[in-house]
Image (cartoon, rainbow, N blue to C red; front, side):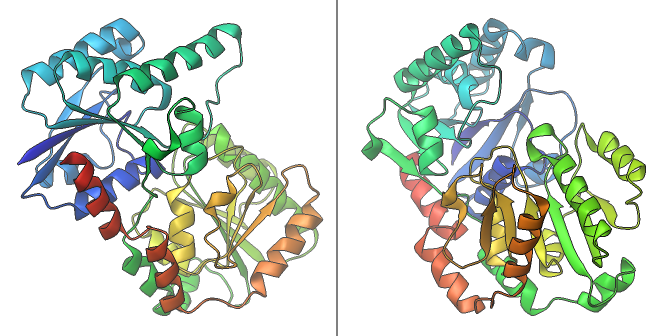
Length: 371
């Protein structure tokens, strides 16, 4: 059995982490086993499942993570003391540079840098610009393989790498789970449990409560919809550091009857099945897994134009809108999506497979890299 060490920040229910877990569930675990390095001492959402599947979790404290030298040396020790690792796969954007360096000096022959984002959202000071440039140089120097979720993510993290050497592995999902959910949607029970009428327009925003996800925009949009007397319900799914702040904003705007917080959920397929419009007004994204899942489920998505156009898989289920546009434009695009005829599940399956979003296809590609 070949053990693959994945370097991650945490393993909570977020885009990149969900993609790694999709791969982990689907890979042949008689041949490959995943282990993980966290940079937190806190419990994470996927801990139990990882351990149940046979994976090991190694933790580096937040204090050690804040020092590049301490982090690199601690990671080097973990790799040396817990051999054999067949490969190391790094998922931490610019910080991959130090992780790959540790793997190199620890003697790991296969070292993958995996790009999940299209930009670094930190400040643009001289020191940060230098750090970006230096990190990308180290990533190019210490990686044996370059992996990206999309073209823009690859261009950002590997600007000096020959594009033919970048392996694009889309954020694949368990396609059939989402294809079938809309066919078997139980709207009556869902609406009854949440006290919603049948003709209510249901919006969902799925993602962590953090600045980049722009929940405040959705709250303001909800206030606009309410001012027009539109019958709607908006669900926020997830958790995060800004959750309490957004809850306070909802109360302050007198929107508690229109916006419901569902918390952290595992039944995303069923939520999407009962959603009329998925909202994603993000300030930026790489290639969000949730947008693959929403299109697989046949759920229309109204999203920010700051998100890469690669996310539109050609099913007429995605509309982009400028964050600076007026809310009447967002409403016009909402109505356009509501009136769009939905694709048949077999059509969606064919598109997803052709574009490589079937998890079984991605696993086979990754196994070739590990070999």
